[in-house]
Each structure stands twice: as C-alpha cells, then as structure tokens.
Image (tube, rainbow, N blue to C red; front, side, top):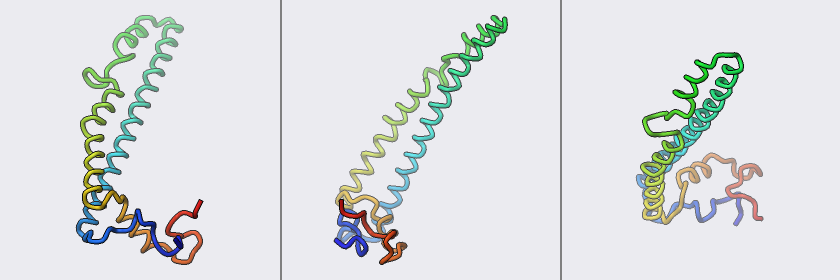
Length: 147
C-alpha cells in the first residue's frame, strides 16, 4: 500500500456505516478516552496521597526528635495511615472505579465498536487525519512505514 495515499484497512470506514453512526462511535470513543484521563487522575491522587502519608511519617519522626512526643503521637495515631474516605485507602477507590465503572464501560465500548464497525477503532480520527494531512509530504503519510 502506498502509505501516502490511503489509510490502512483497519481504519477505513466499513461499507454501509452511515455518518450519524460514525459520529456516535467517535463520541463514544471520546467519552472512553475521558474516563482514561479520569482514571489517570485517580492514580495521581493515589500517589500524591501516599507520598503525603510518608512525608507525614517524616514529620512525626522530626517532631519526636525535637522533643514534641505528644504532637507526634497524635499525628501518628490519628492521621498516619488514615482512610481517605470511610473504609477506603486510595487503592480501594481505584479498584471500585475500575470494577464499577471503567471496566464495564470499556467492555461495552468494545462490544458496540465490534457490532457497528466490525471492530475498527478510531474511524472518525482516521478520517480527520486523511482530511487534515498534506498529501505527498513525507511527514504526513497515512500509515507508518513498512517494517
């Protein structure tokens, strides 16, 4: 295939797929991508909260070294290792998000793409690439070079 002329078959709109369905699949893909970003923010929250807890441990140690045992003990007892919401550390929030929302959404999106587009993903984006790229330009090829 001349990669400067057309998209690979995996990104060509299947025959019979109407414009409204193509746009709907594009919106579905965008919604799933947004959940991926939200999930990334959950991991950021998880890592930042864990880092804060370890930093708090350092503060407790330093308070003790400075002779402030009562304050260090209060922090250690009441804050170090504390749940961020009742019964949950941040990893449990991620697990609940994954099992309750993200995984079912991912599965359903895949099922719908299979049913309506024969499993071909990112069709709207592929069409946009075909429209926006400069045909004939070596850095605007339709597909990667052959390996």
